[in-house]
Length: 168
Image 1 (cartoon, rainbow, N blue to C red):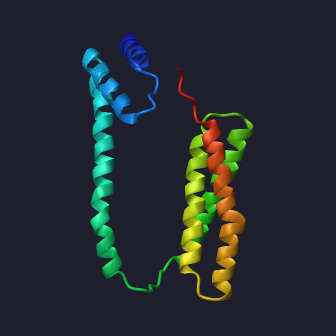
Image 2 (image 1 turned 60 degrees about the vertical axis):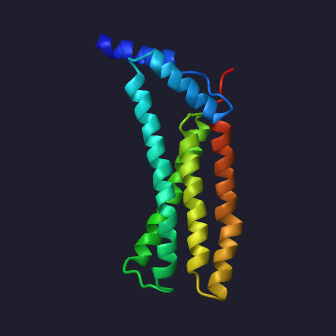
């Protein structure tokens, strides 16, 4: 158990304040890893995972062309109703959770606010893109600009305010 405590203390001591320039922070952290081998593998694996994310995002770019040329203009979904109920349920859960965490001053509200904002923007996008022309589309646009996107902005503001400030 004392080995775990020592390792946690070493990780806490090895943390550097965030630099304004991400590349400077990366080089400082890498130099720091070389000096402290006990925490090296943990921090180095994080950088590898970041590279995997960037590579995956780049790999998706050609896939977008395949989708644009291969997907049909219309499709029928067997679980259409369940998909929308599920999405709106997650939005409700996110809004309630974010509000309760923010009222209590809990630091996790920034994470739930970010996830909820993402869900709201996705909902607005798919509502407007899948709505039939006419009254359905007008209703979807009204919901997007009257409720979903403003709530997403509120969530983003809450997330930004709840983000820990870098220490100088």
